[in-house]
Image (cartoon, rainbow, N blue to C red; front, side, top):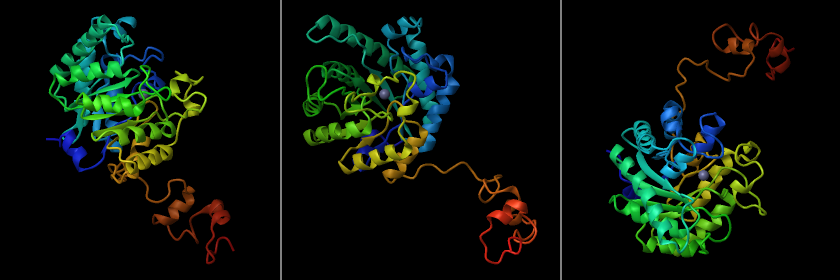
Length: 353
Ligand SMILES: [Zn+2]
């Protein structure tokens, strides 16, 4: 059985996974704009492969792809009535990819239905969360549940309330489009409210790039005693527009904003240094990034693809030079050809003299 989340966090940092919807959009499996996850039933193999890629890169947790898989969002794209199928399939696929060693996290997110001071909107949001959670729990088992990308602490608290009914550990993360949430809370205030309501892990995900997320999570870290999580986007933001969904390239021309794996690796290293317990990525964060992040926090990503059957040595060497190394004779005398003569730096090479 996989080691539970809270035990892992007690023993050290946990590495999460990356982003799904934008990666699958770029491959033609998700519609840019709605970003609903009907891919779980329409192209399950594409999602399974992405889950497996994250596991291979070193992720310890797979989030089920149920972002925007609430009845109201699914209705907008012609998938009304498929709530159960889509949520259940998402859990099964993550479970299959996670294997025995890794964890699977259920997932709910912002609904765009939350209104401050409106009890009826709160009831509607609760109902949307409860419906998704019920189907995910039935398809389970889930190791814990994540509520993510909330712009209002008020909605995040409703998500926490619904997750707590399952008895599973909870992780609640907010998205910041500026210095405060839409209901006017600073990162520190928001983190304290969530911790006070009993969240096991609090933090931030999406919207901000690493540069802007580090100060946000550092403020949260200083405000609470519970575990904290940070999962930034791997797209560059700017001082003028400090969140990625506000960039002119959003939603489907984001390639020029893509951060390198080394930039995400550097984020992971710095997040670890300031005491972040759960580190992962959100939109734009791919297997390559997670692999580098694993290295940066001292984890060993899984081994590279077996070299058995591959040519030994540098695959970019000229073929003639390669032959010289693999038993066709001394490359300085027989193999190589013209390219070898031009490139060889050996003082003893007879062919280049
Ligand atoms: Zn995201």
